[in-house]
Every structure is written in structure tokens, then in C-alpha cells.
Image 1 (cartoon, one colour):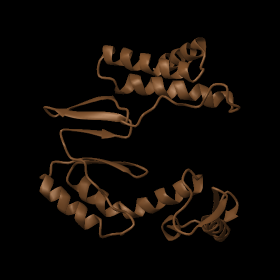
Image 2: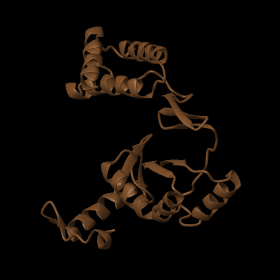
Image 3: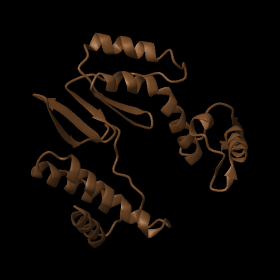
Image 4: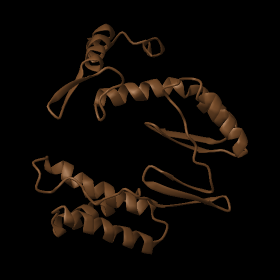
Length: 212
């Protein structure tokens, strides 16, 4: 990666210094569980900004040949961390064969396909109807309406961003006005359960409308 970027330093820090610090963090992940200390010797801590950055950097190089093959077919390839969305007009058998081949690139990264006229990708439901794509908001079966409680000590801007992002997603994803109203009501109820004041919720919804 460093050879690819051809950088000598970043924000005043030498690449060698960044590499040593990163290696130190990755090799010194400890956690306490039921009174016992553990040392993580493989992978990185979930949720760590450094782990996410390294994972994305590695995936950039891992996926280059895959992206090239997809885009050369005139199709679409998108990735968010470890979730990939592909639109391609290949026979399913051929796609599965390609995935088997890609899974030999690194035994630690194994791709699994969900193929169909409709799929879920992160928090969106996507359906192909006569070559037109329709979307809707999607919640996993394990979804529970628990969010950052309003009475927590977190900064106010974080609490504002939660309903703002939720309502923005509903507007973008819902295919009809009725679907949006249903989703908005569900989100509002979830926020009220987490002690968000009604006026606060309305203010964030209005903030979304001003951004549209």
C-alpha cells in the first residue's frame, strides 16, 4: 500500500512512524472478560478506527481484479466495508464460479452471494422490476428499536444526527409517500421509547426537509 501511494509522510509524521505505531496498536489488543484478561493475536478490535482503516485499505487491493472484471462487463460494483453490491448480467452459475475463484485469493476473506431479483444491502431493500430498480427501507429480523438514549452524556450533536440520519434514509429509500409515512411513524415511536422529546424529533425532521 505504501509503495502504491508513494508517500513519505502524512500530516508531518513519517511513514515509518505511522507503520510502527499501527503495528503496536494491532499487536496490543487486550480485553477483560469475566475477570480474565485476554490478548487478541489475530485481527483487530471491532469498532476501532484503525482496524476499519486497515481493513478498507486491504480490501482496496484485494478487490481490484474483481472490480476490473465487473466494470469491464459494463456493470456496477459497490462496496461498503465488507458488504458488496453488484449489478451484472451473468448466469448465476458463472457468477458462483467466479466467486469460488475469488475466494482463493485470500483464505481469510470468503465471499458469499445472495442472488435474486430482490436483495437487501445494508439498510436498504432493492428489487428489480422489469429492469427498473425499486427501493425501500430495510430492517434486519434481529432489529430492535434501541438507539443512543437521549438522557446519555453524549454530545448533543450526536443525538441530533441519529433522527436526522433515520429520517433522511426514510425519504431516500421509501418508494411511496405512504411507505414513508409508515416508516417515519415507526422511527418516531422508536425515538420516543429512547426518551427523545417529541419537539426535538420534529426539529430534526424539519432539518432534513430543509436539506432536500
